[in-house]
Image (cartoon, rainbow over all chains, first blue to last red; front, side):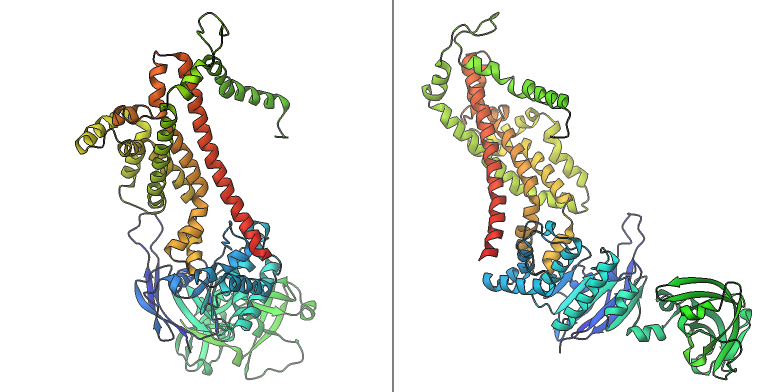
Length: 359
Length: 274
């Protein structure tokens, strides 16, 4: 098995530079990526995810740390000898070569025969849905087609690792979704290990086996999409994943209390004491029928005033005010029919859906 | 040219004619005249005497053209070899004292060559490089190199390092990266710089005269005595020959470049048909 291991790699960017840009540092990253895994690095722009990718590629030299692939130490191996491939944000197709020659470039560098080169290039082009485009020049293709060629060019050499640096962010949304499907399919077919950098949550969730969340040069948490979503390690991760309902408070003697909001209920499962944040995912807030349901023990019931209703593809995002806090919940179109702005509505959250992180 | 109003077209044509074609008319007339004196608008009698002298009378002419061209081509080749790494460094790296390097490199454009040539001459005398083609080639590099470096720098400025990173990630070593990715991008810049270098080297008189001490005979060396008080008919003929040589060389360069691009395209077409 050849897994990729990133051992305490770190990088400091010139504090000496007088360019006015503040010094940036990538804090030590320790990570193992399985063979055939699709791993995403997710974070806001400027968080160091591209830096980490370039360190893995070898295009940047790490200050400290090691990079291993199986039992081979790649730390000092130059990028052209690592047998990795990379797709950049721009297609970067060589303009003076045909599409076919572009795709075959990696094979040419490996000194494989011309016949084999052309055959494999054509094969890969048809995999990305560009059969018959081989003799065209890159400027005759659309942006999406160019990025497909870039993908084919990266994959044709059977790289042991494919690095992707926000490859679809320059494309328009519908094209991006199409490319996402294509990449997902090809990755499974070829079972290539992928490290994918993106700032797009949906993209990362859709494609990845595991995701690493980065912020300000630090790898905050690594896990599957579900793990990250249901058990974020910190409020930073939670808010980056789009969670709006983060309530500060404190846990003592098995009860969580946020005095300002008048919240007080059992929190035995939290396993924490002291100041903590309660994180409530929007879909765990349930709208109660005012008459029917009885108060249950394993549920926190409260009332909120509807502040706004916004239609979001397929469901509504509803903001309610509760004791000075603004909470967000997702409601179906049917539920929304019975409520309106300014109305006080009963809401409930199952205690098992609650999640706390230490403050 | 469709979008241009007719009068602008006419004006451009006139401009082209007055500044480029017109000056050749008296040259041609003078070269085939026999005693063309003021105040005659046209020469009184014609003869091919000057052309006979230039082309057949003295065997020096052909040799001079050969020397001129070989010096210009060697100078240009050396310039390109020097300019590409220099431009790479100047365009891409933050070097301490970069302004000084640039100032020295571009100084020959602003400072009259005469200033430097006196010193070069003294040095070359000591090491025995005067009166040799090698010496003249070395001396010609100083006024021509800045133009080549300048144009290659501009090419480098428009080449993002991402391209080389991409080639690198596809397994291309340093040489392959340069040959397959960088060079094709630099080529137009190199061609522009090389044309300037050829033209400037061809038209050097002073430097060739001082360093070559009259022993390295290029076309301008032959031409000069006739201009400064010799036979105006022969001077005209030489001038025309000189212009033909320069234009011919540039056209040759242009042709080579076009053929290079056409070969690329047909080669690409062929691999598909195989």
